[in-house]
Length: 450
Image (cartoon, rainbow, N blue to C red; front, side):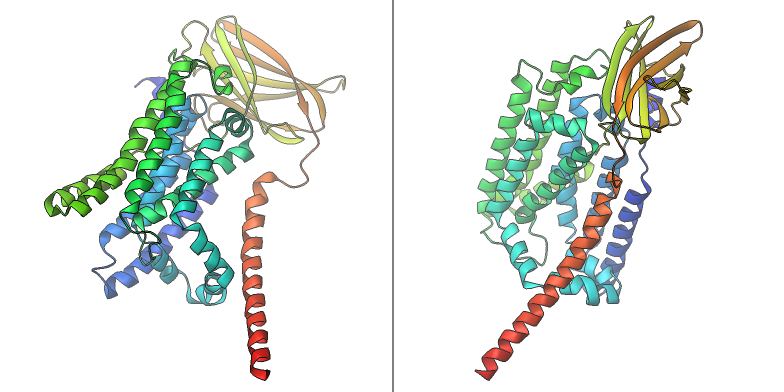
């Protein structure tokens, strides 16, 4: 097999936190579904269980798939990730009617003392009732999609790992909101009549078509970052951009139009055709292949020297004191084909300090993206650093050099912010519920005395 294909197939991102969350969600839903299936087998069938597990599997593949390695280099692969987050994972999860199985699968003390009071709080219920209105769902979905594909916002997500995560969370969250009125997961109640969903989906498809047309027919590069990364298979930036527009248009329109067609057939009352359409829609949703990615860092240098084209990335952006990931992609200078058997050395020397340099071997084993060579370097001090990358392959050799600036360390690791915010939000929700409960009791006692 082609070594480049083998390297891509080895590029998995196995985050323990991601695996733990998905395993817990799968086990919780499975436990609750088993209990409900034995009591209401007609309502909670095997199809709901398969839909939920397929949604989690799609999310896992989106976050950990080898396609992630290509998403850093090709806009069209990045577009597949966005389609997965907005149009594949959310429908699969809602088709599983997840609310009751998840609640039933949680331990009773957790539901009674934490989850139950939060979900029963009137402010949260009013917020949920407002958020699931079709007009709100459609507007939030459309605004998020358009805003994140504006060049400035898209470039911000490409340059910053933190904003990249925010972008993907926005796509997943607004996708869940958008598909809620369409699928209407049991036991929720619709805000609008079902026939209104035909226009809801049609307008969404028009918005998707307009945005994809901008990508397909634009004669300038909308996202300059893709002009600075290495090009694979001699695919030009504009061709890659046009292919991304085609992917947004064709699969995106199909995913919108299939449920639209199902709704139309229901109103035409054609049972045999309706069954065939539903089967085709299920197969389509279950068969789409997913991806989602992680940020590969900022391009520090791309230089053709000797027989090589060498591109140097660094992460985080901007550089800070502490662990720094230096990634290097080595390509043949003429064909652009990735070279996977080179010896790459990374050397960092603080400008004007006069101390010994930091020398580290960069290897493909250290890299998540197996097309790259990666080295983890610990920067001890802020300031200006000289970064030199030496590449050796048989009798061929080349060196490249650039200057990078490292800032002071972060006061708290950015990767912890989610684990701080989520517990704080849960505690705040419980406190708000208790305050509303006490306030309601005081008002009732005041009215009784009066």
